[in-house]
Length: 379
Image (cartoon, rainbow, N blue to C red; front, side):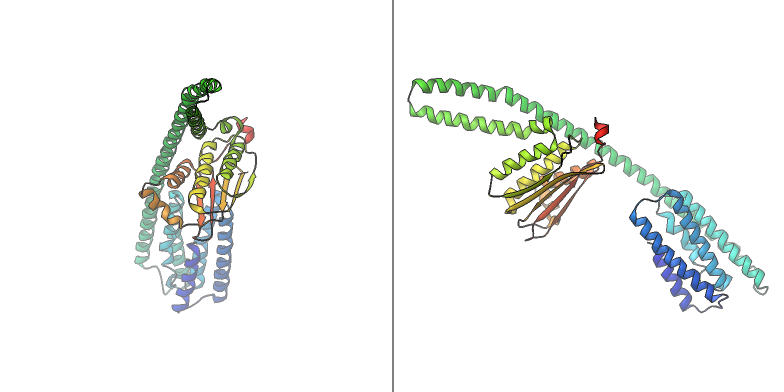
């Protein structure tokens, strides 16, 4: 992208600064081909990853083109000579110190070559001593740009290491949270819930021998408490998720969601098995459906689940009132951390959550898991 405005500045500089063009036709052809090549190269880079040697070749072309343009547009007196000083900066931010140093050195040698060629062609010009000073400045610029690039590389490495540490800590926290929820769910299921069910059975025997109306209210209270405990156990550790996988667990979520209101639910759930991030995706589906029920005022909900390459993608779309995604941070500051917590978890784990919503036009959330091993690797 930096190359395109540089080409524009070259064209503007030569147009404003009238010089004694040596080969104006060649100059226009070279500059035009350079502009076309720059556009093609930008399209190639945007389409996908390119091999590392391609970066070296593109920067070599930059130096070669600038040298040729200088030679055919006035030689050592050309207005393009300052371009040599900006070439190292162009690649300094690519986090490639060696390439930056090599390009800077090549720019200095190219600058010197332009003067040598022009001095041989025009004996009246010669080789002023200041040329060697300029070459020294160019080499210093190359060293400074390479040093800047090296600093950026080291800082990037530290940031990457900190991000990996953060990801591991959040992953361990999620696993610890999952273990704790499972232990609490098992304790509630094997302890209080079983005691409650046993008490209800004993009460049923008493009800058969007695017609006391008070027993009916006690029985109803026990029944409601048992139902609430079962729901809590399911929320803490959904058995269908552990036993059958993510898609059946989301289907169960949708069944309970439909029972809570008059919703039209359109589901397109592929069988993605039991991915490593199924707990994270299940939490996202549960939180998003809960938000739709509480806040959206929606009538139609669409939910999709699919595997795309090495990631699992969950989409939840509703036709509700919508909201401004920018206020999520304010919600977190006010203590409403549900959606904000999900965003932080996905980001820290190497996944993503994209919220597309406009007030009055519904909401679409796309949650993408961290990279997953292929099904063959999982088995």
